Image 1: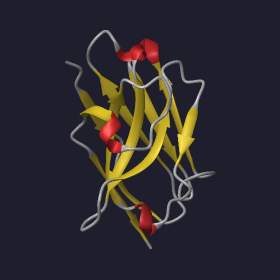
Image 2: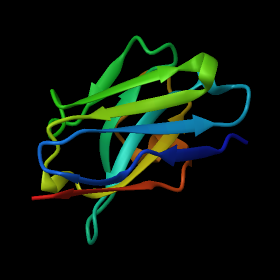
Image 3: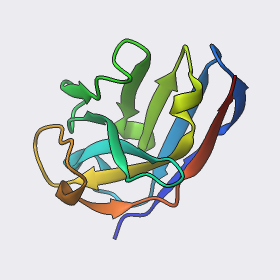
Image 4: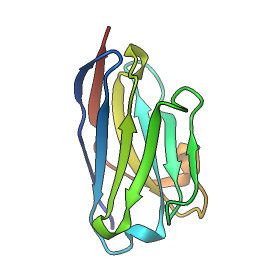
Length: 124
């Protein structure tokens, strides 16, 4: 079963940028739609962005549209989340996950494998 390891989180000032990476093990990386979710303290996990198998389709939460960019490199079995113009409300643990769906999904129940998460903290 595929495993995911997120990295790239950290502490950044408001207005700054970060790039998260999600490296997957396993040979079927390109067979799955992938997504990023986040969970802030005391809140439910929420959808951030998703990308289709070949990277041709993407979907974003309204709260990050225009600021975040999702991408993937199937040859490197890695997915990325470029985050710019960060806000304090972006503070959360960010998780990557995979879905069997052919199209980007925003519902967490459509994802069946998750990483451990990486902490992003944005100071004001």
